[in-house]
Image (cartoon, rainbow, N blue to C red; front, side, top):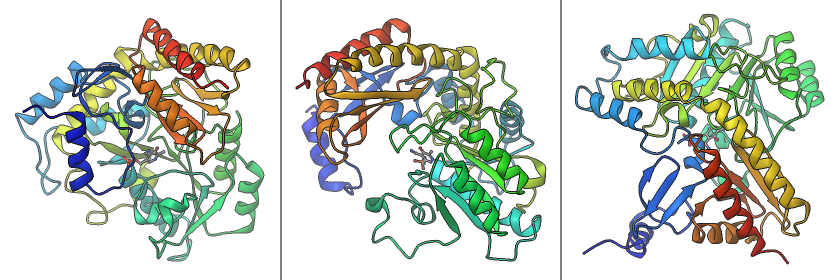
Length: 422
Ligand code: PMP
């Protein structure tokens, strides 16, 4: 007998840990910007698995690389070399303009890796005494779910009753240059500044134009590592290959903007594999990366041949299909059209974002159900998005979307919002 959506949800409810609150839609197929549920209903994907499926679902080039590699060699561990890893490492370092890469699997793992590299660098190169290194982080951050990372989260639901917490983090307000300047001036034990160029999980919260450049300059002046977490913003999502692309050597000819700064450590995940396989990466130059010695960090799966093959194909697609340009172009249309609607709306008050990472703010409280109810209705109308808060909906479609498809999506979003106007 055929499994129904209700069956699949019941199974998960019964046998799965309840660590998520998904929209009640059971997906069984994807292609490009589309997803289908078990019953065959077709949707536009407007989340891309939290900005992982930038290249679109089941991209033929990526899947073919994955199948070919899976039939040849899947895993050796790093106990031995594999024939794909070195080639991938050369490819990915040149692609992003760094000397070296440390391959991992998930975003959170890559953030943990960056924290370790930064601390070791501080003890060996900066002369901070052992166990004293501090890393500055920002209010509203989201860097993952591990014990160290939740130690400096503001999300009480994610943090409470999971202590004891890891020390060594100083939290300052996001988008506040003066706060950064003050901490740097008042302490000699700062090793790094960990920042999201745009705070995705905080509701696509955007810093002011010159924030990142000023922050980077302050870090440089104080010999503090500027660590960019581009797990969500990276890989063409915001209309350039990276939201901070100072090292970038790609041929996308992105506008040289205020955020055109070079991070000392770059953290990537999600769309580096087009969402087809868990791949993450930490990039840095020799002076920093060489502090890590054999036996000090690793993962059984990090740098496996399937990951290497998939990531190379996924990054090829970003250039071949000019995804940065497309994200920039479609993002402008999205914000213009939603902006026009919002001018006369009682239910939506603001659209913000960059490239195809956008959000709308709903005229209700953060703990209301309104954004959830709107997303439920949008799903009914054939478009899948998810709230970040009770009053914020994030919109992050695959970057392979056409202008015609985007206009179709905008009309679904607007007609759904109209159903909620008071
Ligand atoms: N950093 C940022 C900025 C993220 O948005 C996320 C995921 N939403 C992560 C890290 C964690 O990535 P993962 O879920 O793969 O651990």
